[in-house]
Image (cartoon, rainbow, N blue to C red; front, side, top):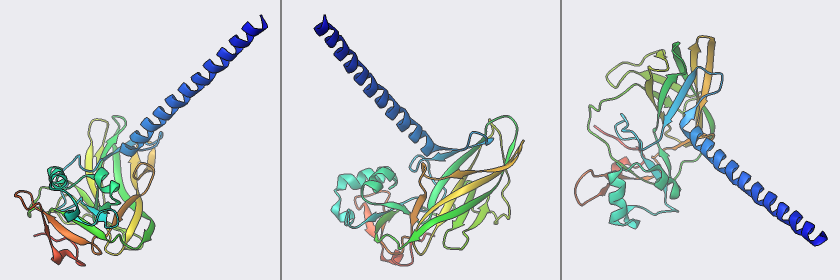
Length: 270
């Protein structure tokens, strides 16, 4: 009887241990899912505004050459160190592959393009009134190389805001499109069914900058703000002026061309 009781107790302890592991795994999976969601959505429970941050590579930017990535030479010396298959795969993605860039110590080149979808949480209108960037830290620029593919002039643009991270404090300019003059104020009206999009073009000519921003609104219960960042971490952008520039060719066997004219002065188009 004693031996049988001991076996029953042992079995009970094993089941409890296994159950504990299962609960822990479930919690880890749930937290991972919540973390992934936070990378896409920004907001707070009490805010009437929801902001969706479009992942890089899932949209065609209205900027003439961004987004693109500066790659650390210590991780990958340059395009010549890549196979033609790798370069072709990058070209198929319009040279925008954030996951690949981060695997090779890369980060967004200036300007960093962050596209936001702004939507209200109810049928009551919310007015988005301003975007206020904040520099978290700044340090010397990444010295590497990059591939950019400037498009022709006259690209159709959506609403965008230029952010100068080198200014103290950072300055912001609002534009309806590339043919419109700079607006002094931002006034976007959104509801649950009526959304607005705006791209943030965050630039630096001097450094690598970590930054975040607050999106201010006026809602049915008064004003407030929502902080946006990269899944709980600051956005990060580096100037391209300390790196070697390559032009990505859209067609043909010559996939990239070294462009010395971009060195020090940065990417140009038109």
